Image (tube, rainbow, N blue to C red):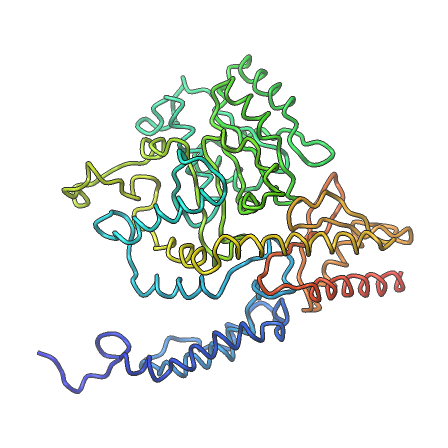
Length: 487
């Protein structure tokens, strides 16, 4: 029996009338934030624990009005955020998330589909197939590559290496690895510039860190193919089983590009799985002037590209393309009785291709983004980011107190303060980094190359224009000058 006096907080969801009443407040927060994002410090000026101290210690006994919750979002949550969409966010790989993608994310959450089977989420399953076909066309990949959407490149890569492990034929899916005396060490090869997710994949898959051999890179931070071949042949003589090679197009520290064609030739000769990590740089394959960096990636067994890094798509959305997608189902497909459906023999189901059962409707936001911007719009924005990075590199190189540490292949610049007045350059650059970031005016990051601390400036926000690059140049020069005067 229904209680006619029940409060909306007692049963059911928020009433539509309350949503309509607050619609202008919701859209106002959304648009005002994007219009005025520059008014926020890039990094919040607060200490660890400040936000928790400002919030209620215990959950509310009674439900609260949506308007009050939204006001607290504006008052407390926004000031505690690191603003990745800020035009002066230049750290790590600057995000390119778009408002149109955020709208799609909202609609995806509204539907709340779990894309495990075609039957449980037809729109999700079929739109993912279509959207990834569109993306592969834009990237110039052959039709034989089929894609899947995961959350991050770490998970995409782990699945690729799991498929490579299964392809070796040791029956690890069934018998595992522990306690098997006849199972050799299974080797994965990558450059010394490879992303740390490769190390974590080896940990997660039970291969162990000892199974990962990092091949030295050259003076441009590119994997040396001759040393890769030498390492493989040494392992074969030692009874170690080569399993896979990870080549990177756009490394994290410098966006260097490994010689994929040379590596592919080695993999083909030794029948090794080739995985290409193009998580960051992949979208640049859409640019004719950058296409040469991707020569040979069509020879890979798997490729990872992250639209949430540099294709206007809000986090999270990572795409794994495979030449033979059945390699993943051979590693992971497992169908309990309660998930069997009449159409199953004829229909591919997402749950067959990984450790997840349910999957979010991520393709919706990528579909929105590609439809809204179109190929021309996406290309123009990628080109603008590259031009701004090149402009920064040219301007900073003019200054006698700075040097470039790596080629500018895409939209990342790696540089370093090197004044003759600096006694300890590494310490100076780390202090400079902290001075810039703590100011709230901009955010950059760092790496270590050849034992030297280097600073990284990434361009990726849709809001970044030339005046923002001029601003970070001014901030860097001002902070450097102040520090030099203090020495």
